[in-house]
Length: 533
Image (cartoon, rainbow, N blue to C red; front, side, top):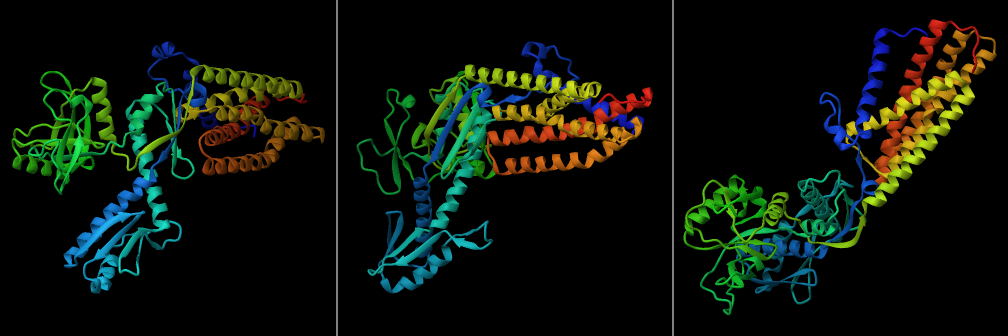
């Protein structure tokens, strides 16, 4: 115990110094950080919503729209499959079901067999079995009814929420904010917390847009008052495009040349007149399709449709090769940037509505920070005074290890880029109380060994050796509890678990390695004959 190899002393000192230097940037202002040496770490802990303010949104996914789109898609698949087999039918969607009426009822069995072959099977993650997401039945009138199963709807809903969370995360990250908290909340709801963001309306506009983009050819021979023929549909022009001479609506082909799924990049750019435009680029397949369509439709218009509104309807002057182009319109720099961000992030699979909105002001965050600081200082001071009064010089060693321990916690949180919330501060304050536990166990054991008649050096060595097993058991059980909190908790609970688990690991290091090294160095040099502990 009294002999520490030089490499071990060097390693312990080096780890302690790295932790402290990594924690230092958290105590510096932004101006001081600018002049901070480049070779030193400069990452700071990110403060959560409750500490620096921000926006809290609870949004609900419109699952009825998901069900409708799924049924429309399945209706088209079934209709195409039946017509391929020369089965004549009429189909419609009503009351969340597809109704298929065969002209020749004798073909019902053949139709059911084809429908059975075309039913999509979903893999169940829980049972490993395959679950059909569509079920069918036949009415007394011989009409085939196809609808989604409850299990299929639940699994589809989960997929939609997962996709929505990923799209929302890409959109928020593209705004330049840091550490958003985006997670599933209950059934069909998504919790969004963005620290440091002070414009909830802008956030709702960017998140709430479905951003479904499509490119469709315009039928220029149909006026605003004319009836829309089969195979076509009418869409309104965007308000910004309704300048003099342009109609309020256009009729376009239902056949979509391309959709937003073919986009690989989009963003703000500038046209020849230096006005803001939105540039876009397709993937290889999309670029080829776009080139073929524009080559065949020179001097015709095509509509760029976003969320059911035509945002631009340019004339095709020549074949557009290279898989890229621009969207021109009455854009501002901000609106062009936002549209580029939405298109690049991808389309939401379903519409979102705001259920709950809450804004946390920076003043409340500052109050929370001050309250956390006061609690931490009072707790730290009380523990340090108690440990010195109880163990004397040994208590000073424990206090030094405690300060290093706090530095290591802050340094690790900074290096990991963790988000610190108020529960996380509570975890640090709790760690301050727990950090001295290991030293208390060791010092009490040393005191007992010395009172039993052992020499100072023998009491020190035996005290550390016999207390080590108890320290390990106590910290391992606490660490297991933090793992459970992290695994099954969410948001602030995870923050508390992270800071507490880091505190457990660093307190083990400072108590078992750092303080032991200091006391061993003192005992080896002084060779004391008595202990004041």
